[in-house]
Amino acid sequence: MKSRSALRAETYLDWNATAPLRPEAIAAVEAALRHCGNPSSVHRRGRAARQLVERSREAVAALVGAAPDSVVFVSGGTEANHLALLGTDRPRIQVSAVEHDSVLHAVATAEPVAVNGDGVVRLDALAELLAADDRPALVSVMLANNETGVVQPVTEIAALAHSRGALFHCDAVQAAGKLPLDMAAIGADLLTLSAHKLGGPAGVGALVTVRDLNLMPMLRGGGQEHRRRAGTENLPAIVGFATAARAAAAEIAAYDRVRALRDALEAEIIAVAPDTVVVGANAPRLPNTSAIAMPGIAAETQVIALDLDGVMVSAGAACSSGKVGRSHVLTAMALPPDIASSTIRVSLGWTTNEADIDHFVQSWTALYRRRRGFAKEARAA
Image (cartoon, rainbow, N blue to C red; front, side, top):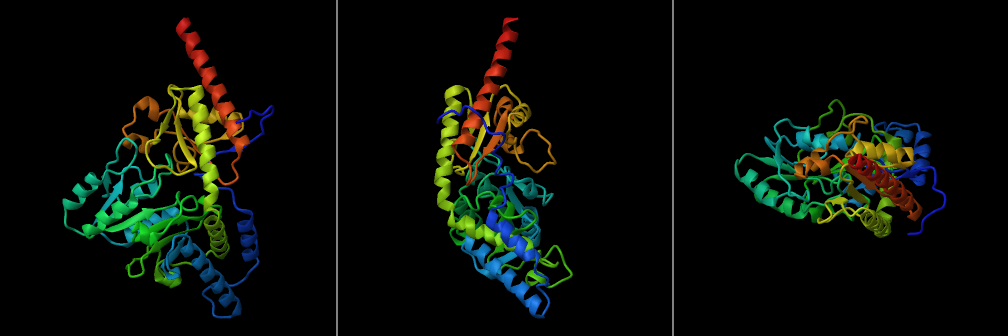
């Protein structure tokens, strides 16, 4: 790629934490904010609000090839995951060791399923867990990891779960909008979505279920969402979610360009620093995600240094109140401590361009050479 003589002030490469709100979603939210009407009211304004909710339900369902009445609107991915794991009332829960914290900590007695060195679920380990106990189970495995981008063999996992009479829940928060999704093809009984990962507003998401699944609500007291989630629907957020879902579904092909940018970024980094490790590079990955280890330089140091140069990335998941610590995902992959502690996540999106990649590469290279220079001087002394 061509170098720039002057770098832009900011380069945002933390799309897996949250995506910028799409302009069309902003417009849809603004319009819905002007609408006064409770979707549960029977008068004309209430009926108009209900129509907006149901049209939104259709758009979100279409994103994953599901029936509209299978969509339960909730406050986000975390609530959807909790509703999936707790609402099915299964006595046994198996979750992969690399799941999002909202899955790992939803059920205290959940059994972890081991992954291999690439972060892919070991089917033999899951089969062994399922065979150990005949009680009804639920298996929860994400479609794509939020830290490494590694894509799981969810179709095979679903088939294995079903062969033992277990339900299969798939957290598709990171994959939605980046990969084509078909709930039936995956074999998921429950599937989690979050609006702000695909250009919608934060604070809204959905749990999509198969039609005949009995789901116990966690929030009770009202008949909303077909009695699966009480509380007045967040109309502006739901409408924004649906608008973003339509746009994301129409622009899946744009991620071919994003993949090319991601691959170029990795190639340039490796050319500068052959000791760089791209975590999960041997497994299928999301087209926008790169987990890069700069051995010997703590991830926190990298994140801060890059931010000072106007480049925004993260270390692990962005769900711990700003905390930067060792990743449970990288630990589960049994990566050497020096690799696990020096891995940052670079995640791209639909507006990322070559200038953004140049900015990152130049800033990362400067940090790498500066730190290597310090190390060399220290050894000479």
